[in-house]
Image (cartoon, rainbow, N blue to C red):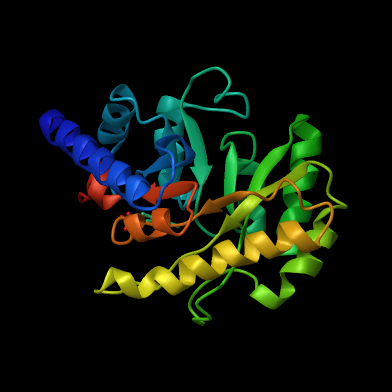
Length: 239
Ligand SMILES: *Cc1c(COP(=O)(O)O)cnc(C)c1O
């Protein structure tokens, strides 16, 4: 198990490096989230012991036991401890469970959620770095706000002082030919660039959370600053 994980980490690292080189980017610009939703508590602890300190989960129900074992909080990153990223769509009634435990929110997709996060963050005295999820591909099944709504969404977010938008996130449709996801990633990057140019007050929205096991190299070539890797990095097992 351990050997396999070490091999996977090395393989992924090599591929990240090459994608950075191909696109003239520095390796430091790209950070990896190990998405542990398909693996056990032990495998998650193993990942942490091997230096994968950014952990991603998409459902609180599944994440809870792992979080209780490993723990985390808003200050974890500064302290060099495991940092949790919530990457799935979050129901408003789960905000109280997740905020304060998970440092980053990758799926901010509606104002009512921003309001709930803000309320909880104020109670806890923290600021929550959030990615705005954008439905670039236009698939009905995908969460996220429509690209056309982005400007007004960002503007309205300013009323929630403990919600700090730091970037955009998207999910590309699964393609057997990963190259076909390129236009989705490129569109997210262009949205970010336009936002930074046109909209004052959006200066903190610099990150791009995009790219999964099947397409992370393309996402890196198109500007990803956070890639979210499950299967290829920590594996997939019946839990
Ligand atoms: C599951 C998941 C991932 C990782 O998926 P893999 O294809 O296994 O790398 C990334 N992002 C989100 C939002 C996910 O739900």
